[in-house]
Length: 189
Image (cartoon, rainbow, N blue to C red; front, top):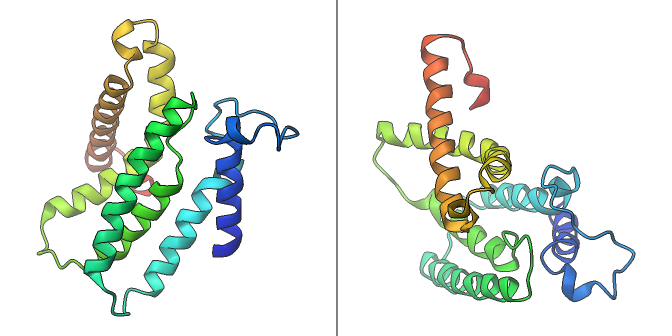
């Protein structure tokens, strides 16, 4: 499954961020239209993260060189910034999907389970936030983009990012409040 998901991921990179480079070779593939809710996003982008996450979980009892993995994380992170700048310069419309983000996040997720943190209530809240924000962010972004794009301030990607994150946190907090006080919504997170 891991190998198949990597092949799908490479195919997804050709379809979306690197489409303008490979357009002549893969001219039979329709150009990406910006619909991030399409089913192919699961096969091409999400499946590889789930597969790598499962593989990392299997390796959590194995001894690893944390120093080496940390260096690799830093190197891949720097390369992802370079790749982001490159994709932005070739006028890519959807540059959130990159080769080096996959590699850096895989390295980081290999290290994280080995960090022993003292239990605190904030970690439980952060876990709830992470699930809700992950599930909500695309829909909220699309909604905000459609509603706020007429205002010049919101044509800035950093402002849209901050607005999306704040809106996701507010809606997540609202969902958790409703779960405690009104109806059970625990299944959402």
